[in-house]
Structure formats: C-alpha cells, structure tokens
Image 1 (tube, one colour):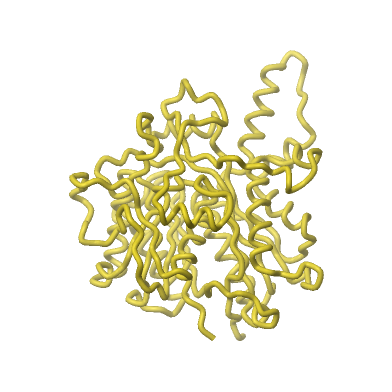
Image 2 (tube, rainbow, N blue to C red):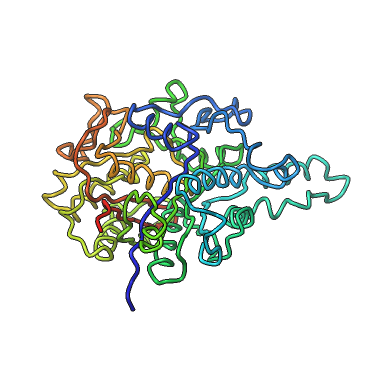
Length: 420
C-alpha cells in the first residue's frame, strides 16, 4: 500500500500571548510571558494565585448567545482556533468533499468549568433535590470540541477526541497524520484545547505540588532548565492544524507550510505523575518518531521540548535528548515555549507544534525565557543550546516537538520544510 504524503496548510491559535497565530508568533519571538494574576475566579485563598489566561477572548462571533450557553469554555477556544485554521488554509467549504474531512480534537481534562459549576450548584441547593442543566453532560465531555467543529462545518470524516493528559493534542495530530497517510481522509482538522484555570483545576494541581507558587513574580515563574524552577504555570487556550494529503493540497493550489513526516508514541510505565528519572519513555518516543520519519537524528535542527519547568521533568528530558542525539545534541537549538505560554495541558502539543512549524517557515527559533546567570542546575548540561532569553536565527529544515503526560504517556512529531 502506498502511503500518502501529509502537509500542513493552515494554523489557528488562541493563547495567553495572542488570540491568533500572528500575535502568538510575534510575542513568542519577543519573549513575552502570558502570566498574571488569575481573573477567572477568586484565587485569593489559593497557594498559587496566577496563571497564563487567554485575555480578551470574545466568543460572540462564533455563534449566537443561545448556542454559547451550551458550550464550555474549552469548546469555545477549540472552535475559535479551528475557525482561524480553516480560514488560513484557504479551504473552499462549498466545494471540498466533506465526507473526506475529519476532526480529531483533544482535551486532557475537558469541561472542568462546567463540571465544577453544576456540582457546586447542586450542593448549594441540595435540599431542593437534584436539578442539573440539561446540557451539563454534553458541555462537560472531552469529545465535544471535535463534535461541535464537525457540526459547525458539516465534516463527515473521522471524528473523535484523544486523551493522554499533556500529550493529548500531539496524539490528535499523529492520529490525523495516520488517517491521511493511510488514505482514510483527504483533510483533517487536528488540535487541542483546555480551560482548566478554575478553582478545582488550580487547587488540584496545588495539592500535587506540581505548579509554581511564585506569586511575587508571575511572569518569571515558568523558568525551564533553571535551578530555581518550582513547577509549571497553568495555561489555557486552543491550537489547531489543518493536515492535508499532498495531492489534494497541490490540486487546489494551497499554501503549504511544512510536511509532517513522522510520529512516535511511548509509555514511561513508571509513575502516575513523575517522568522516568532516566528519560526512558522520552528516549523511546523520539527514537520512534525518527524511525517513522525514516530520518537520522543528525537531520533534526530544532526541538521544541516538553520543558515544563518542573524539577524532575526538565532533567529527564535533557538526559533523553543526549542519549538519542549524542554529539549532534550540541548542534541543535532547543527551546521551551511553555516559559511564555504556560502549560496548556491537553492543548500544549498543538500550540507547540504551531511554534515548531513557524520556526521552520521563518528560520528562527523562539526563546526559552526566564533564565538568569548563576541559576545553573548541576544536573543539566549547559553546553546545549537552550536558546535562552532571545530568539535565534538559523536554518531549520526539520524539527521535533515533544509532549509528555501524566500516566507516563509520551508523543513526539517531526515536521520538515516541504519540497516536492
């Protein structure tokens, strides 16, 4: 069976540092942090009182007010990102075969805001008996973003959600890639969204001691690879990619941004929340992505790392990179864009894939911000180029993006410059 080539023809992003792709990319290159005091709920009694929120998000242009009430914030972020990506792709929705267009859209948690509101309302009025909004379940479930995007546009191809914690939307992109590669669809809308900056979301991660408590310096709190890192910064948003069979894209004269050439999946099989200390799963997932792409490690120019700013996770990823790439690791650029966006959980992979693709398109690497001289960790090799604090220009022919989730679930994708 001949495998189809798969290209990316559209991008959409709603993030803490920009509500569209141009704004997002511009602020990435400037090293802008999206962190600030939480406004989405009263966090005054919480250990962590800041996060990377999406600012000035207005979903009123997506649907009428009645329909808005039927959707959780995570679904609205998804729809907004998909709308931009579809417009950006130039797809003609009047002529495209909608039976050949699918949607795989991820969430690590889904409608936690809806769950929290409905259960809270129940316990506030418990004496009156159980009264729930009829849209409680459809608003909450994590597959609804994929469903709503398909409903909005009439896409009848493969449609589902992937859930693998922080690797969820990379899984979605890989699944979309495979669907096209195997001839199951011509076009796939793939990505992820998350909106977990809620009392239960922040409180739960605080209880795990997973997130930073640097309340006096929110914008400096996400500091991957710095000795003083104390956990990730919660983010929210949505990211979407339009993947397309090459022949289909060429036939309609699409603007091709890059080619997707490989994906890898693995499990740490080690711990519920901690990465394997030697980076075992991270090594496997990068090796498998390279094998799938039929590429050698020295062909990669840039790695957008998982890089969450957690004490253990950053070290294990560096160990894995050194193991997989050997001497070539010192010729790579590495950057952790979570230092600016925060950690978007199930949306992280899609947002970071967009950053990786734009690095290829523009031949420039976004930085890892918040590293200060004298903040070196003895467990990290600083001869590696972490692209600290300032974007760097370089030729980027091929790049890899890593995402690792709770449960030890890992996913990596490889994209490269398109050439016929």
